[in-house]
Image (cartoon, rainbow, N blue to C red; front, side, top):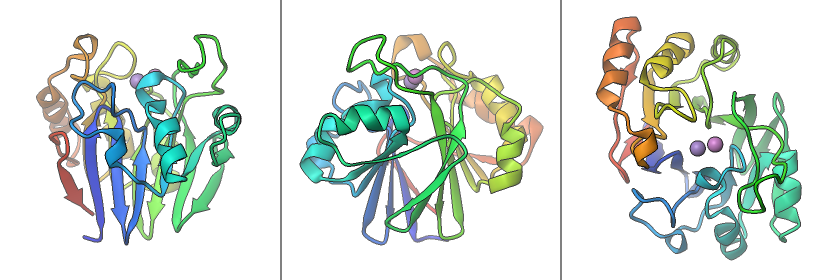
Length: 231
Ligand code: NI
Ligand code: MN
């Protein structure tokens, strides 16, 4: 432990740094009211996108065009990004790929995935989550999702060390549902995301923390934007 740096950039956007390789997940930066960086500040090697909604696909096109990084995403989104000249690694739920030493397994998520950037009805395939494996550290980014029972299967198959879970409600799980998710996943660390970015997903993360404490011994880490933990 200690060689992997995980940074929250606000909303569902995380940056993972490992041995000089930079991974961005769901890089919603420039229109993100809580982000303080600009997409131009970022030169990742890989971007992983959970689904086509604007607050997840975000600045993927700009960043990948400029940095030349690969974009890991579901097949339909991959086709769309390729049509824009972007280098992609398309995949689908249940499959795994390895890019620059980082292994991605795509998981289910209970959510929709139109590509907002294209137009409201452009099919983005299915919404997904990612199991990101770096050496023996496993991070589960749930994407946008409602609570689903197969999180137990995700726990059994991948034993995540860290779970990044939406708690904002309305479009995803709220604090209580997300705490139940922690109970199924039983990671060492749970980090709330996808809350307080907009008024409609206002949520007190302390409610999440307290509920988790009543269920299991997972440590909840409530991050500030741009703050990091080391794994
Ligand atoms: Ni969404
Ligand atoms: Mn979202």
